[in-house]
Image (tube, chains in turn cyan, yellow):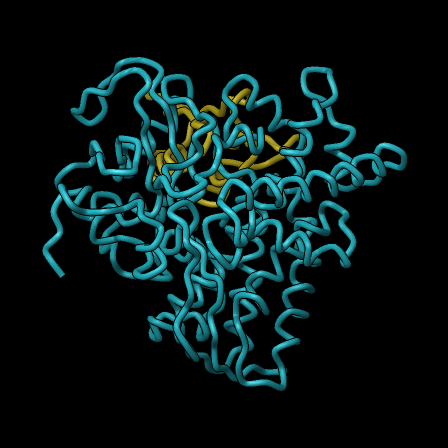
Length: 411
Length: 64
């Protein structure tokens, strides 16, 4: 392969993510030589690639100067490229202060550490059941049989969605997050795939809302259906978008951290043995897994005024893309940043974001990941790949669709 | 040195409690509270880490 240069490197083409996974070498070069880099390539609207931890923090902490917008992430133009995100969903990720805070308040108290702590026993039980299903066999697809199941079950339980509908939630989440992937999106154009999935989602949530208005329960669906923003009920489009956001976000990222975490442990047998010897390491291990896998690849911001960032002059209207996995490998923040070290402390990764849009579900994700990796460490006697991991075609979320493993597990 | 938590910003993510449980505590209103208003120097490093990790920038360290 030719040597990497700033002029030719590619961090957007979704096919590269399928073939090679995250472009860590490219990000390392950008961090070193052009941390605020004007990315200009055919088929991509020009944007600034932000790859340093400190710069992403600076941008994220000024939501007025760097606004979120309908352009959620940078993608390459291809046939039937998606509409601006706001036309698909209007939700927390593309809202700004003060609206963003007002909307976040509607469900925020259900995601605080105290609130999710009440789900701990339920999460442990679901995890045990998921792993019980592996007993008596030697091979499985870790994604569909393990890592997808736990977050899906937890978010669906929180919403009060009956078990019979979970498979549909799984399918639609995949279609919404990976519309450019042939297995997830479908056979039509990206926009058509998205539209179809959204319509199905909205019809389902609309019915759920009607039900919870008639007979409210103590679940997330009721909180949203009967919730209010500045004293008014949520408008229909925003309400249904909110459902979709929480289901999708509650599904995809934890799944990918779980899969990526096990993949990292298989590739680093010394760390796997370390965790098995000392399961009390699990909290630190989970932070390291989140830093290492960093499932969200990028979100964008738009500069609302001329400003200077890390020595570069930005103009009003310029688009910035914040590359979170790159921040997680920043040599100036993390000692031996390319080493996977389950005991790493402190671990100030920003894989959950930081500032106004800090991941609403971070506490829930942490709880799920801790339960999963604690139980895996206790029960999995051995594990290895039984085939290559298949990555999702996306430069937005780093997804692994299938990961065959060969294992021995205690009953 | 004094420590303050801005309750207009804090939304109870609890990162501060994880790294500095001697200094911060989450209470029933899902806000973080400072247990030691004037902490000793020995706690400085963990308070600085808490301030750095706070996703809402709600923690302020004020030098006397």
